[in-house]
Length: 279
Ligand code: 13P
Image 1 (cartoon, rainbow, N blue to C red):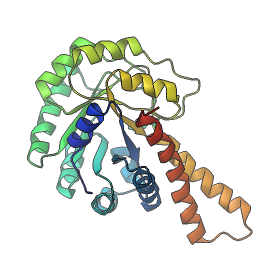
Image 2 (cartoon, rainbow, N blue to C red):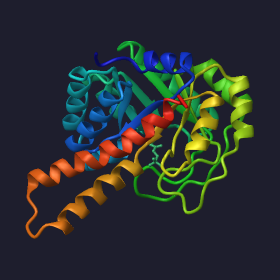
Image 3 (tube, protein in one colour):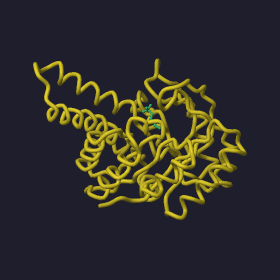
Image 4 (cartoon, protein in one colour):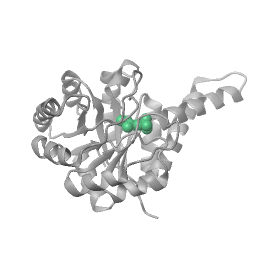
């Protein structure tokens, strides 16, 4: 299997009435844990990293590692830039060989978002890479900073946006938010249903951490084909690392590294099973 285009994985997910998991990574252990889970379940995944995370995990180090992991994997893997915020970062990801990039223009006005995403689509087409964009505002914040107020995606605007930009995936805002939810979110499945009826483009659900399995299945039944998970993997890694350090008198790097891999592996495996939507 191989490094593949996100388009292929979204098409397969649509044919199989499931969603492909897009798992955020920040170090080698996270990459290894996610790939191990995907291989064990024989399921393609997307490995992704968001622009705000590049302070901790530089693109020029993470990118080649993510791509190498995909190329050496027993399953198909797409490598994706999550929440690209600037065109130079999009360029850099494409040059490194990412098979997909997101440009997040959700805080721009509609016309500005359309124009910038059109530019990204043109850039990506030279690399045969896929493009994801966002319309409406997903709550919380990917990374530190002020939490954004949720603004649900307008289905009519979404149709126009997809037609004018030609994006391969559209991130929707339906009450979802990045980070841990303080209370169980009330997702607007009525809005999602309208978007699904109006738009042919595969839909993406951000803010997967804390959403229940039942909600995931409902979202998949309404056209969600990519689901993003970040915080839950970061939290699992930190918890497994802490538990290990607390359990021994003298921690060693090698066991600590293995525990980080295990933490991410467990979280990714759990989510892939739900997204495969088999039972
Ligand atoms: P969570 O951190 O809530 O899982 O969100 C992930 C995400 O949407 C990344 O873009």
